[in-house]
Length: 198
Image 1 (cartoon, one colour):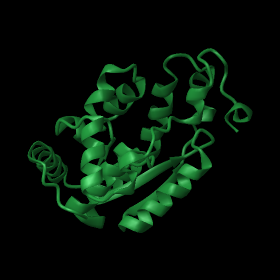
Image 2: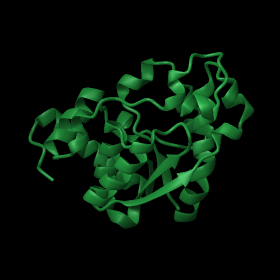
Image 3: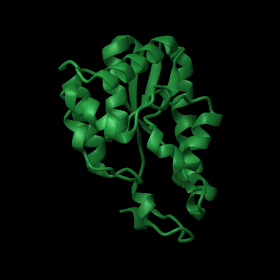
């Protein structure tokens, strides 16, 4: 990976690496988007394969090509990567599809990866950046309540910072468009079904 030479960006990258070293071992919720890919790459660079484990939640709400891209990125970057099946569709509150749908989805994610992280003595980390904090993100609340941490926020990264740092590090995800889950395309109040997701 190329070196980051921009002063403020380098300071944030140093802070991110320091926070990851503080955590020691992490399980990165890895969707393949720009934020989680950057976090997974830096965690791997900082902690190595023994300390950084990228995990992708696979369910009907994840576009099929996104799982394939996560697998490809893991191969390209040498990440320790595991796909895990999540079962948010079995949660009635998720299928109801009110404005807290993402809370129930992220709670399911944490239920799936939490035991894996606990077995490794690791902390679950998510690629949440500062720009995400102003949005309606009930999923962040669910993750935080379950003990997840947000290292990009702690290090002061905005979305633009993530993209710039990713480009400096030679990550092909630096300009990847935002890809919301398939359920986000269903209007609130319309019940989520596998048929609507496909």
